[in-house]
Amino acid sequence: MATVEKERLRTNLDKVLWKLEEARISVSEHHIVKLVGVGKYTDVENIATLYALGQRAFGENQVQQLESRMKELEDLPLEWHMIGSLQKNKINKLIELHPALMHSLDSIELATELNKKLLVKDRKMNSLLQINAAAEDSKSGFCTDQAFDMYQQISETCPQINLKGIMTIGAHTEDTKVVQKSFEDTRAVFERLEKSGATICSMV
Ligand SMILES: *Cc1c(COP(=O)(O)O)cnc(C)c1O
Image (tube, rainbow, N blue to C red; front, side):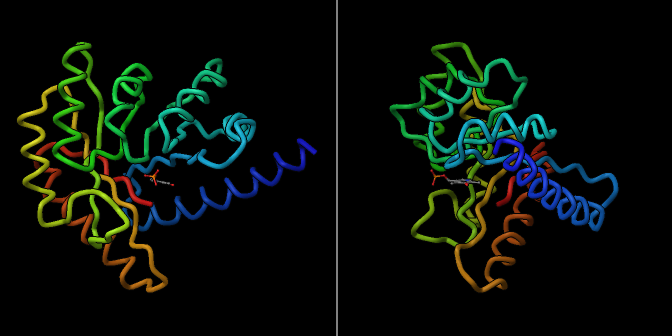
């Protein structure tokens, strides 16, 4: 059974990597793209299998699950990302876990609180500003016209947070034009922020 599952994962990973590579080349041969596998609802064994197939970066949307999986898989040199909304009472735990990147800085309040707690522990955290590109009620984050100013503000007032760029989850609709626009609008924000040192544009 295990080998069947491994072959299924290999096929899926190959498909994703081919699509990614096609898209990457269409932008530029020098364009750098990183795939972050989202663990979420999958069994922890599948993460280990994907690592064996060559996938190294993984994300979780809950601090508790991130913690348990980091522990269970601590012998593997994985790169862990926090992708979900961060509750204030989980900030200290996340600082202890020290993820490679936190994708979901979605309010000034969270940034202020995170910065304060990082300062106490004399730690830093690589983070992305979350953009709610289609201004959906179901999602948190900054709308595209606030994003630029908020990015500068957090950079200036939260020195423990290493802002590396922005993250957006594409609009949740069947209308592909709307989805595409949400990515394009995010991309436009990113291009302005590149002049302020942003290097990562995370999109799903
Ligand atoms: C689920 C998910 C999120 C959001 O996590 P929430 O817990 O809903 O905030 C973000 N990014 C990706 C890729 C996800 O799959």
